[in-house]
Image 1 (cartoon, rainbow, N blue to C red):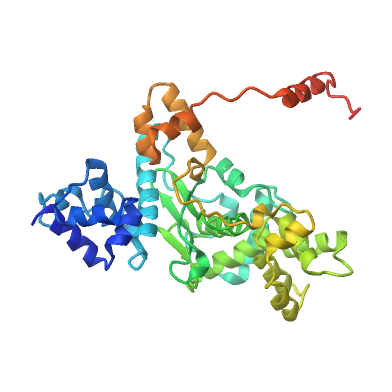
Image 2 (image 1 turned 45 degrees about the vertical axis):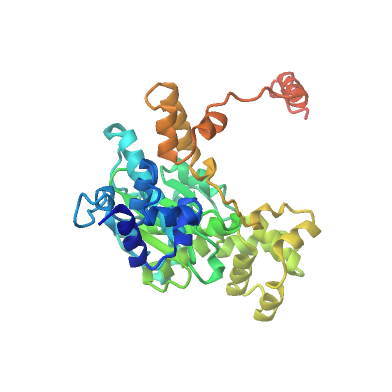
Amino acid sequence: MQLGNRLAECRNKLKWTQLQVAAAMKVPRELVSMWENDNRRPNIRQLEDLAQLFNTSTNYLLGKEMLASEQSRPKILLRGLDNASPEVKAEIDHWAQFLDDWSAVLEDSQSQGRAMPPKSLDHGPDFSDTRSASKLAIDVRSHYGLGLYGLPDLYAFLDEQSVLVCQAKLGSIGDGKEGISGAFYNHDKLGYCILVNAQTSKGRQMFTLAHEFAHALFHYGAHECIISRQGEGSSREQFADAFAAHFLIPSKGLRKVIEETDCTSRLDEYGALILAHYFNVSFAFMLNRLLFEKHISETQKQCWKKYSPRSLARHIGLDSGVFQPRSDAEPYISRYPSSVLKQVRDLIEDDRLSVGQAADLLRLDPITIQSELLQAPAEADVDEQQEAIEFEHTHGSSRL
């Protein structure tokens, strides 16, 4: 069987179209057709990506093996993605491969193994009693000194806790096709690893981060990748949802904020938006929490959820960024946490990693590595220099 036949066989087995494969590979559909007809041959990198996309090996595609071999990464990572589109499957495949590649780069010197929660928070490797979710959320906040009010940037917080958080383009959650908001995996060398759907709003991403953090703390014993998708009704997912709700917006903290603001006498749609902005969550999620805590009625929720949060924010001068979904079509370097990017930069500068190797690791082109990761910082402009001079003369005084 020739290469083209094997490519067509793998594609048809997954019930994908040539157009879907082309979108996942970021090539024209006509090129996929030429590959399958043996009129053109994929290059080495394309062949590796095709093998990864089809969950097989390059040797099988080249006819050197009778059966598709297991990949080097844990096969369990692909569980639950049989019906996913090739684009989404490719994104999760790339994340899975990055985790293994990154652990190989770090080697044993920085390998921490499968992670476990702090002893004071450990309730076993698979705890899913939803009735305890609110108390445990407060316990987690207390352990990390997070108080009861709006949380800091969860991306930075999790990075500080050695949780490796990456982003990927996993499609629109509300389109009824994929519904994947994120994923969690306790890697055998890297520990807690989280994937977030970058095509959702910042507020929605905060919920995903809190949800996956619940998996990390209370479902760390899972040996499979836990895929979080819309409509999933498992006990794990229900617990993680409940934990995230109370972790992001504690009941007591919400009540105090409402009492301390102008929302006390009249909580309207703008007040709800201000609360969402303060807690750094989506407008829809805030409405659900307000209803659950009996601060608004079902009628109010149904009425207010029809409004565009971005429009409401502009009306009262709030930054609408927290409510704005991303729609970037191309890979971007910010999908990786700052700690990883800094380490990659250091490895390149220490001649332990070439620019080409870094590009392959991060699945970016060398030009992006050079221009965004290695480029020297621009000099301060006039206003920035003036501000620096001004503070040099304050010497910590309180005159400002």
